[in-house]
Image (cartoon, rainbow, N blue to C red; front, top):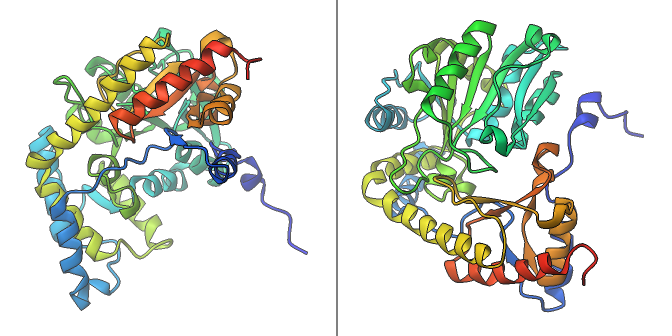
Length: 394
């Protein structure tokens, strides 16, 4: 007989798309053409230079040995050079940044460094589940702040309960934002840094979508702003920028003490990233200038196609300046999960209900721009039929 599961494990939320994969398999077995707009996993290829670098690195026996946390020094140097060129941020490659097995694992490990039982982390709601999951597994408490349209989907930096502020250790921000696609103005980021300095919190800034931006918008790094060196660590990912979701590569950058602590935690959990993937990451960074704009143009075309057709179907669509998502109000006040279930059952379209990423996401659904413009238009029309039928329709 197994022991009783830990209290922390029992507090973990459910999988955001629980039940959807099983329903999809059933419908596909019946011959239904499913259009999947649920997961943020693009159907596009990585940069050719990254693929070539991986192939070449796989032929070198030394690359199959333990990489440990140091990894490939050239990748660290390449990341530092890219951060300086892109954001004007100067980092020591060996103390100011740390390669990660995807940014998700680094984000999830952070509470292990700063939280004692009963301490809080402040997270956006809705938000990436690694935020709350990492806090819960570290024995921490989660203070969720709803992201609402009236606040431009920004976490208000006032009005927190005193009991939370007294023991809050971490503030999680993610802009450009998943799932709302909101962007944060510079003055808000300056305010967030001041807030964390005032309350002795670490600011964890998830910048996974910094390079998927449109219409001339250039998302900033939190590390560009004065005072960030005291309190902030920023997370970047190769997954979205370079269509390398399955390769598992990212990095943390910022306060050297925090970076060193994260490296220490990781040394007890993993032995680093396969060196072949690190060499591929370096090749991806080196192809940024001539490859990323074309990739972003594809997402912009998809954004325009999906937003235009959804608007034609009667949805209230805000056209975002960044990310690979549309955050769309559910018509008629129907619960978002009910709408999402009807969408797949009645029309074979998978969308992510806002409530799957937290109670604060109720009233919205997310569309991922991960299929072609044609397929996005094909999906918008049946979604319009689902909305027009209403909750009782079939």
